[in-house]
Image (tube, rainbow, N blue to C red; front, side, top):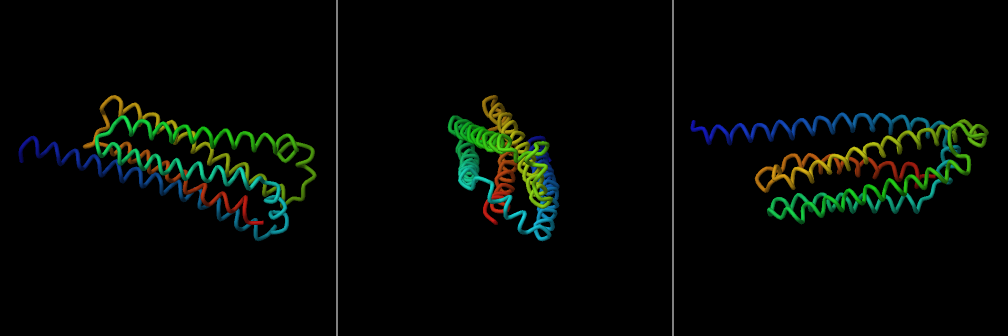
Length: 206
């Protein structure tokens, strides 16, 4: 086998290993959130009225806006893959920046939502929170933990896409070699998917 053919085979194997590693990582993330969804479901079954009251305290419109934001960001990151496949680096970078900006908008909305809850006392440690029924307090504990954990994933995803942009600009990601960008997009789609479950569980089911 010639050196060129050997290099092609090795490159292909590296790509497959990278993709497999990312899918394995995403699977562990799904197990993590799947376990949290199971815990939520059990406690909701045991505290249906308290969970319903807690859900009614959340702003459905902010949740819906953030859902649209993340769905749009998933579209833009997917379009960036198409752009790099067509060797349009400029458009790929623009679409990746759009995704990051949308991530920041999502986080800003979440900040204001959490801040409002803190000011009205619906936050662990406040006097109002200590007077809540046990089930409602549990609802908000799960709400802050699960949406907060998701927010951490949003931050990590945005940073990862920032590294993707750097590699595109440096020429390390091209129309012939864009596995790193695909992996970044896969991670971002996971962030979106998790929110698709969080939104109805906390904001819609009363």
